[in-house]
Image 1 (cartoon, rainbow, N blue to C red):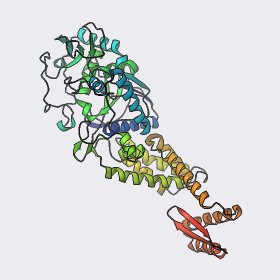
Image 2 (image 1 turned 45 degrees about the vertical axis):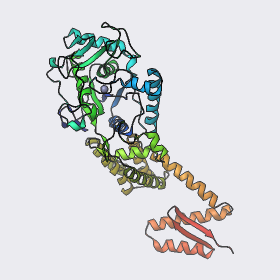
Image 3 (image 1 turned 180 degrees about the horizontal axis):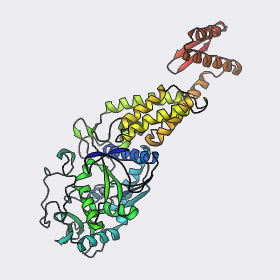
Image 4 (image 1 turned 45 degrees about the horizontal axis):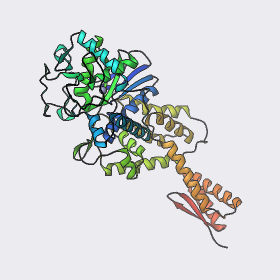
Length: 481
Ligand SMILES: [Zn+2]
């Protein structure tokens, strides 16, 4: 599989350290508010990546953190504490806020069919691990104490600015932002590993440490939590492009300084979801959440489908109009799946392989989900039976998980229920005969045997039964004798 690696800025063959096993890390949410659908686009694409790595035969071990402490309103250690801000806003404790928004995040993930990573770890569970890593960094000379805080000394590394050449507008924290000067820092890019009570006296959560009562900086948690579950090497690290700098840059700095070797080979960054007025954020414009989509009558899986239709490395523009188009296309797709008959012969292996190859070719090419969706449409065009088509769709759905099979089953149930209501009162024997004739006519039409189809229609008409072709299928009326 070819994947674009942000660390080398090239598309590369993805080769895990150990054949058939992938260690994957995802930066999790800071649980002080609902996730907006822009963040959820990132988790959706990461989910597809994890599933696809599994689909092509890997055992994927995926780890995600939950940030419930230490993330300040600027990713570069300045401003208010996000968790504290959430607690104040809602007159709750930090732990109550963390619990509430962690649950809300996973409820959103469930609705979007985003699988939960194998290991999910809140930062507050790992304080001893953070302290141990910071002690190592101090002992190796990569960190220093100043003004009561412990800082990482970025001047000690040659490779610090690894992600720093992203376009400025892609970064949440860049030079353009007016950053409060922290006079304790030796270098402008240095970042906090541990805060003590000298900063934020109203911080609720504090722990004893060798440097006094305090709490961890944000960046340290990802390095520690990744190594806690998968050791010193990561195959692939994922996140939103806005986390590339400084967050991921800082993760690399800490991890490589601690372990003394390259830490993670592949970096997968999902680009922004924009609105027509620019990048989506919590503070700007309409706050778009999964609940809001539902309130407006959208199935969250329509949003998943919308995300699949574009490449993860392109900014995606969200508008209600675009989502409406996705909804129409999604419903049509469900309708087509609903028409496939599961009991129509055996799986045609050659056609199955042909359909599957189009799908894997798309995703092997830097996870091109929009071409994978095209491959899904191509299934209907294959010259093969419905059984094979359904088997292909089921197979693709283990990666795309758009809920197509379940939605098609619901649609068929509704149709059957409606037909039963319409046909109530018709003699069952007569009904069975009419339905059999309707199916025969449909088969004749499909075989382009129009004379046969017309003959069936006339045969029924002679018995006082009029057929009516509608968008929902062929219906009939029985003329009063
Ligand atoms: Zn992270």
